[in-house]
Image (tube, rainbow, N blue to C red):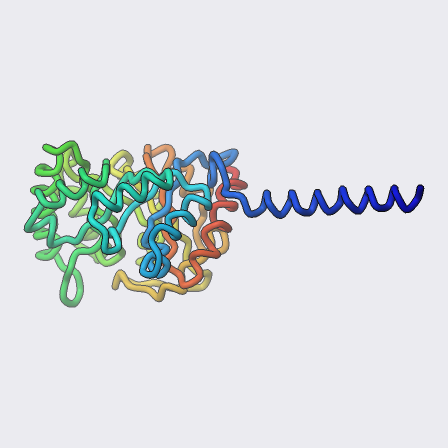
Length: 294
């Protein structure tokens, strides 16, 4: 009798362990990354997994799905046509909300950007880097303002929303303010929106909460990205990728930032993790957001 009971307990224990292992391996469902305070919606900037995409696209898209993401932001289509990449995204249940395209395409071929964006099913199309020699200056800033206003107007005719993604160098002083303030003042709100990359606001020494409060609804998108503790940044717009760390382990005051973002009306949030260990860090960042309270 004792032997039979022990065998039954052992058998049930084995079943429990097996079920636990299966459960742990199953893709996350529903609302990955959202919790009692942070409500998202949260997506992934696919550039985070660029090394994986360079070797295997469908498998990497499955990994994104298995993290629990439903929406994504693009930065290229990894040697696929926009139409083919959209098919692969659809096959994995991933909705592409926004995408980054090179500055020179907005300057020289806004209609081509529109065609690609429509084929991908995007709502937002943006620019994450303004090419410049040396320090970013007022002339380069004004040139970009002109490009952004013209491209934003052209893209709006196709139902697309243009945005600029902060990258640090545009916070150089300009009179009593910064070149970023000049950009905000001179770009047309109807045609130019903004994506706050929190890393690239803090790195040059600025406060994301104050900028969210100052410019409110101009911020429609956000890159949720943390910066290694102790790192002191600069105005170059450049930093070693190893300085991207798991959300909640770096310098950022996420309760204050995300609360201010919600009040400003940010519509979409994306984790972007450029570190060599992004594949391991992304799930940890999602768990942090799920537990976050303010």
